[in-house]
Amino acid sequence: MLLAAVALVAVVVIGLTQAGGSSTPEDGGGGFDLATARDDLAGAPAPLAALHDQSNQLLEGGADAFEARLRELRGHPVVINKWASWYGPCRAELPIFQQLATSRGKEIAFVGVNARDKRPAAERFAAQYPVPYPSYEDPAERIARRLKVPSNFPVTLFVDPRGKTVFTHQGGYRSAADLSADIDEHLG
Image (cartoon, rainbow, N blue to C red; front, top):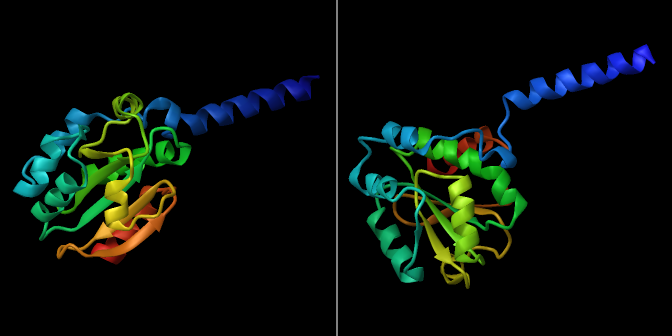
């Protein structure tokens, strides 16, 4: 009986220790502070600063507005993340995008595409997982089709400064190191 109690205490202590430093979907991405992120991004080049000015907004306008934004971003590498509020792996990778869009957002443009989602659900999701860049609404996946993005979720595109898609990552990122490595390899 004593051995079982000691084992239970050990499991609880280890679990609490490991949980203390992690970011999970349930905790909204580890306490990410959008205001601090925007302060960190101050001084970015104008096209990137325009993205930061629209932090966490869900933008309308469809494929035409999205393509106009990509034209404005020419000369800068772009990371495009297609997500949906209802899909677990999208939720799991958002803290990674919060982190890297903040740490690398002065050199790389980050843009979201919210596909096959209802606006109220996407807005609730964005309130829980704020990011320092906007997302474009894409309920019928018209933007995704123009970009030739697969229909699965999540998908991340890497667009070079000339506007050419150079890499497509299907599935969620498991770590900031993995996303950063893809940025360095394909946009570096």
